[in-house]
Image (cartoon, rainbow, N blue to C red; front, side, top):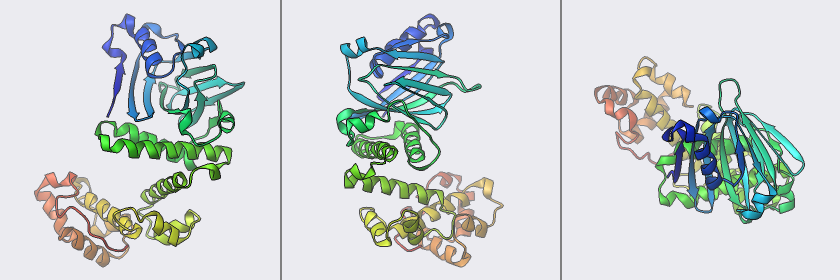
Length: 343
């Protein structure tokens, strides 16, 4: 679902910086861009439109950008922008504050006030970022509150910043796979996550709509589970405790899913085991070791569970994939849809 793509390699060398400047004025926000690397300027960019919001991924040579009051008078899309630094070093100055960001950090700014920004390499790594552009009317937080986040570094690597970073990374990586049916869902969860991140920084989470808080909590739980599938102690009880909610509320959160949470965890574990059993590079790893890697500590229990879902024992499945290599990449090669059961 890439709606716009740009590469400086598609232009003559002498025209590349000018082409980038013009593209950035149209795709992002009108601003003056300068660079000491005009003669060999390199950049790629693409944009994903999710209804009212836009997600832009960019990699470019070092540069400086300035959005003046005169440009704002000419045109103001009235957007908030949340920008994730993927690599390189980046910074912004706006509303009397200045923030410098490294990989994993976020910075927040708006199009309605003048700003200056810069981007530079970090060693051999060029500046790269992912920017979420959101109309001001869509964030359910006060303008005064959001104004306090402008040109403030939001450190990455933990909590909601890590969750939002991973979400944006997946949006970009899966960009070519989305259908029109995905747009509304992805727009909603992206807005919820950005709003939750901002509210968390402002210590104003209670101001978010209940449904937004619910969806953000679901996303946090999904990430928590995926990162701990190999832990035999992972269970609805430990998940509820880690997120400071009751087991009953946890089950309510997952009522809209096709599987209860315990069954979903079991399905994920079995799928990871199936994938590893089909991997020729893991052919010498015992079945029991693969099972243990994904949280099954009882080999007999694992074998019964695997046979129930795939109608073959783990060993039989491994032998079959060796004879039919094409099965290695398909989770549905043998009776594809796992059945509901308990962890």
